[in-house]
Image 1: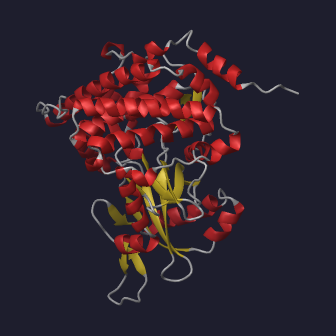
Image 2 (image 1 turned 180 degrees about the horizontal axis):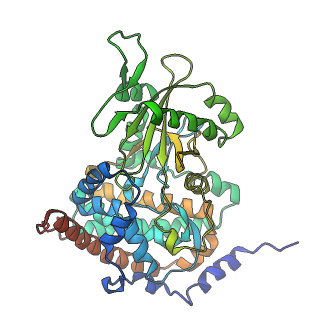
Image 3 (image 1 turned 90 degrees about the vertical axis):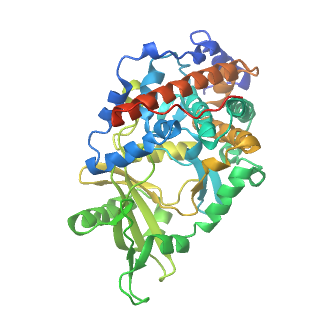
Length: 446
């Protein structure tokens, strides 16, 4: 029988990765490394999306450098592939940024705060998520009006939290790590606001927000509202294709959850525009009713494309079905996931299925100022470390990072350089789109 490695052996294995990629090498970023026009990479990634929706995506990306960053995963994936990496693999969120953490309801009704977007998930070098989250803190903090010095401090707070949490997780019993929840959430101002919003996002609240009576009589069946261009009802063959896909979706659920799902009846279908990175992909909502009018269930049926990192991680083994890829990645990083998480296929395209807006909420950037930004950054670090530790080897990651601030300094330097690069890319994007020079960015000095 094999002999399990000791914690010291895991740590030593992580330290050995420094030989081919010293921690200082993680700071590297130079624009001259690029082999292709980044905006062409972005345009190539839009192929196959709904053309009529692409102007909405462009508008959201043109609004600010952080808005651009959110929609530019294909650019950063390419850039990360050009610089040294540790070779220490874990399940990546793939689109780690401050707006991709939030609250949602677990199967037992408890509100959970965790990473909640896995469209780009794939096994890859752990530091790629860390770099993206660090850069996002600079860009999001700037958009919120925080000064550069505070944004830099928030990045260091995030990195210290990630490092110390990873060392803690490396020493934990396996099941204790699996069940670990981030504490102090009610005392962190931005997250207490998120949890409050999530409490209000009940199924009945969503029923009022998303649907209306089909006729003037209040007792008439409810249908989706039309909120152009964000929400539009779907009819005919398209609606039937979505509803028919729920049969194969149900087979991807765990048996006990399939039983509960089968007690709901689908009543209406709509097309919804969501997020920034996902705009242009097909995203449907299904309104179902369970035990009476006051028991609604809303499902999101979201098209999934190949992860933007896939071309650069050819050795990563992922399912050919992109919805299944996301389901497996999410379950790997989360202990408590959406009870109705599954996948399906519609007209040859891969889709993820999950609940829509059930007790879900994310941070408002306006909240990310002063001490709140530092507190939020700390929770981001602990949450990301937890996801990586659950899906990877926390001892190896902790061994590579070490207990000093060398790793923190390298990633912080990369984040600063990459935030500046993103601002330049955003300016180019805006100027090409409008044929006018973009306004200077609003990042504030100390």
